[in-house]
Length: 370
Image (cartoon, rainbow, N blue to C red; front, top):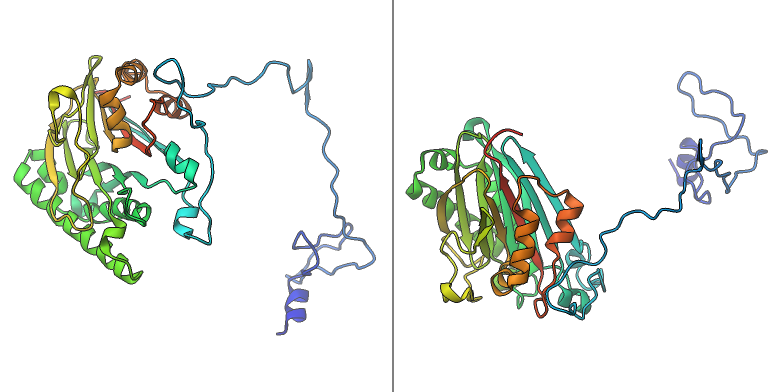
């Protein structure tokens, strides 16, 4: 069938901007036969707009403006100089993977006893330079069936700034972690029973698998493995509300902070380097794909806890700025979880000189079904 015959069969013409032609007064289609086009009826390329919607009191539009949160709050008397909105974009011709990454990602979930909010925002410096967001996040459900009980997997990854393809590495690390942790037959049981050694073995095996596959991906693109370098932090939460243990694993830097009874505890897993008294965290880090083991912890959750898993785009200003700690403590230290749009506005609290990508998953522990 040639092109003209195929176009006639589909009742379509390449010159019609709307694809399929619908003519007024066309006879009904019978016995599955294609409709017949009446060439005497001109094809309309304009449309009449419906009458404006009006209510009992007049037009639907009112003089009262819609509520708006406005620019994010900030520390100090003056906001950072960069505009707090998306700026230049990467070009498709340069790097398709970079060009299609969104500037902002907002996510969340809710299960009996648990609420989650998550966000990833491109840093001011990357926006200004038209560079991609190198951070990634993942909120998903894994396990179940033959693998045992279901788990909520919360993950953040921070592509290493000097690695040119780290934006790919961070997203792939999250995806691969979900894939392999979902197939683990011992993961849920090791968390439920508090078997720290078994959990460590499982975490190390998954990290090795992720590292191997990221290395293979680099070779497929004729790149060195280090060009995909990324950190990875994961929290595994059983969906059975009777189980209060959470599994944590990490490769590289980032933050795992706890907000409990209005007070911040900035390093609840004890994996940050540096002077704990000064709240200064060393940014030197291990990274995938070369890493072959993980830092792991089993944590016990209390009702009312708010656990924050983040990249250093949040953990660094949180450690270094009391204004941010006070603001977020006021916003998140409550059993009433913020709506997604409110959470995003709160999450973007600005601190001068901190212009890196910012990503976090925040878990509210309610302690009972909601």
